[in-house]
Image 1 (cartoon, rainbow, N blue to C red):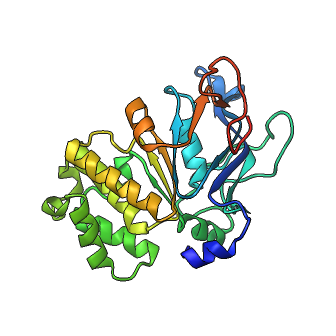
Image 2 (cartoon, rainbow, N blue to C red):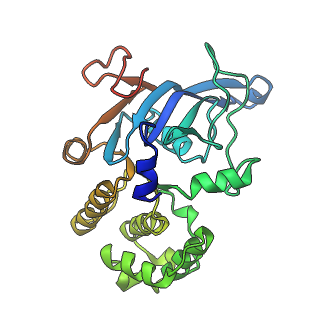
Image 3 (tube, rainbow, N blue to C red):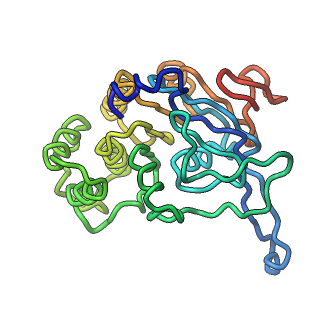
Length: 279
């Protein structure tokens, strides 16, 4: 979205907002568990605002629901109930009707790469949102890095692809391995590829799940420069990390999740409101 378009939005809230987002997964215990499936609640009435021009940290212990929330924000999976808004407009993907009390009975289905029923609306949403997540299976292992990046750029319908790929590769110090096949890369190089793919999308919203994982010091410095650049451009950034130093250095504000609920930073025992959201 251009700066002029954002200015025209006037008093409309900008950035991402999660409203009373719940997510249940169906689990089967034991060999005959499919006869009596049970529901496990991973997110419980999560409400939070992720503003533009800021790097919002998403903190919490393993299993707190951070990655699940990121995938819902990205439109990759649907919540059991609740909704996501971008710049005040409800998402066409990753949202279900608002419900009060217990979660609705609908299963939280995983959205395919092509999107849900409203393919056009889903594509429009995903063209504005990029997620960097440590899932190497999302690349084509037998293609070179350059071929992978060309492919994903083509999916986005971007122009000037070759020059942009070379520019992003140079900024992330990837030029030396662009012609290697993806399966030949180290884990740190794979992480740089995930970062590069998100940058090629030039997204309004950039969601990052532990992006510094496996990166060397030069890679961390390059990533932080890109994050700060996106912030200066007025992008909405959400950063998941377990590193307290990174939270204090890069992030403001910080949303804390404990067992799937938003909590006040200083109060681990009970839920409470955060600026821009309620629990």
